[in-house]
Structure formats: structure tokens, C-alpha cells
Image (tube, rainbow, N blue to C red; front, side, top):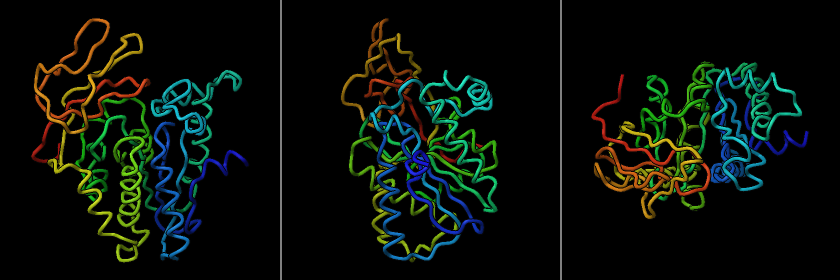
Length: 309
């Protein structure tokens, strides 16, 4: 019971009828902004008595990571969401499961409860932030319905990122027939990231048909918040390169990069045990690594004239 109370940030609306929108927040424990945003939305729904159709679920992801303010304790919780990984974890002796493996199974019980409900359609949104400053964006697969959902947010849509990262929630929910996105609101500890997540939550609830735009408090402010955070980039972006790293590489990013910053082929990006690391292409940098945990040194993204098919 204690785990369930702590896990659920908000549970709102009808038990069975209408659409369902599920938000994951804090699946990385050093990313609390999504949790704070969902708490704000819960308060506004209650105090303003906003008409609501369907069901809103907001779940904390990595409870222990959030308590310790760490991306993860043993392994990255957002790299465990494949059929193979889930089967492996379920087959383990419970005493041998690490922190994130236990978190995974607890989250799956909530997913199964939502799937057994009568709600239709069903959406998910995974709320994230980055260690570098600047830049809000959404991450989707090439499936048209997922892109259509992302287009309700006035921020760049990044293609190719979900396929570059193995075993994330995006792929898991897509395989289970849910439509959704991951949304990055900005830097981990920036108060503006909470504002960005709050704006995205309201826009996703409108897109799903749970609330009417006219009933959303400060709608125009939310739109302006995301437009500014989107950095004025082309609406469609494609991952051109991922610099994958291992702990043993001892990779260190050169200080001062921020999301969406323009970089050139051959520009120094960081250092590892083998020496200097250079950008392999012109483009914009995405998610330069400025935290001790993680296996993505940086990404290079480039403009797309239209979404990939």
C-alpha cells in the first residue's frame, strides 16, 4: 500500500469510460521536474473543478532514484523495457533483483491495471529533462499516430532517437498498442523545466480529449512557454550521430555546450581515455552529458524538411 501511495502522483477522472493518458515522471531519479509539474496539474484540476473526460494517471518512475537524486542506483530503469529484459527480471529470484528491476515490476503492475480497464484510446507520455541547459523537444517513432500526438506540442520533434536507445518505454508502449511520446523539457534543476512539463501535460490532455482547451488555465502562457523553449528550430529533426560511451571510457564533455547549439564537423566535443573526441558531422548538439551517469556522450541532430516515412 505504501509503495502504491508513493508511486501515484495523480489519479483523476472516470474509472472506466473515455480516453486514458498515463504520464511517467522521474523514471530517471535526477529528473524531478515532471513529478512537480504533475503535482501542479493535480492541484489545478481539484481547485478549479475543470470538466474532465476519461482518466489521467501520473506515476513516479524510479522511487529510490528520486529519493537519492540519482539517475539510477544499479542500472538505467529506462533501458529495461523490452520483452527479453522483462522476462529475465521476472525469472530472477526476488532476492537477487536490483533496485531498478524491482521498480520495473512495480510499474508493470500499474500498466497491466490500465490495460485491463475499459479506457479507449490509451496514450502515454514519458517526462524527462537533460543535464545540459536549453531546448525542449519531443521524441517519437516514425509511426504516424505518434507523430500526430507530438505535433500538438510547439517544440521540435526528434526522429531516430528512440531507435538509437535500446529498451526504452517508447518502444514498449508502442508494441502494446498505446500511442505516445517522450518529452524533454530542459535542464534537470531549472524551474523553467517544471513550467515546460506543466504546459506539455495540459496540451496532451487536450489532445487526448480529456479536457477542453478553453478550460485550461493560462493556455496562452503554456503555448508561449513551449514555443520559447523550442528554440525556434525546424519542427522536424533527425538524429545523425550518437556518441555511445561506457563507464570505462571515462568520457568528459567539454564544458559550455547546450542543447540545439550549432556544431561543425571536426569540432572538439570532449575527451576519453584515447584522447580528444570530435564531432563527426555538422549539425546541432543534443543532450551533451554533464552528469556522472549515462551512456550517451552526445547526439548530433540535423534539420528535416518533412517527417520520415
